[in-house]
Length: 132
Picture 1 (tube, rainbow, N blue to C red):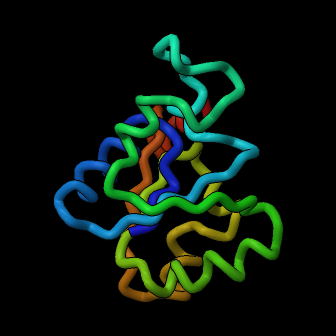
Picture 2: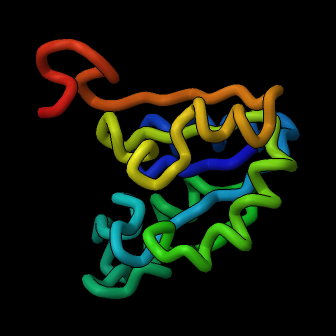
């Protein structure tokens, strides 16, 4: 499973599946970090340090991790073999973000016809508030 989730519900979903045995690779970017990396919750956490957040650590147990700038063409050299490997892709960006990256369902399924994609966003993928 490829985990592109960057906010709570996606991370909780993939954590649960990982804890149950799914093989998960979390894909991140330093240009838009996971929200749990930004949240300073305890005195040991410091603003600006993305690697000392207990909430992020908790939500990402049972996962491997990879940081890529998906806007750079070179990232595809690493991500394409993972798309071939994955059964499932999970993301919870704003609608249209994955399409801009060439990672929407149609693009993924063209490369890996058996792939399943779970997309979630705060106000849904379609409808009057989807772009809010």
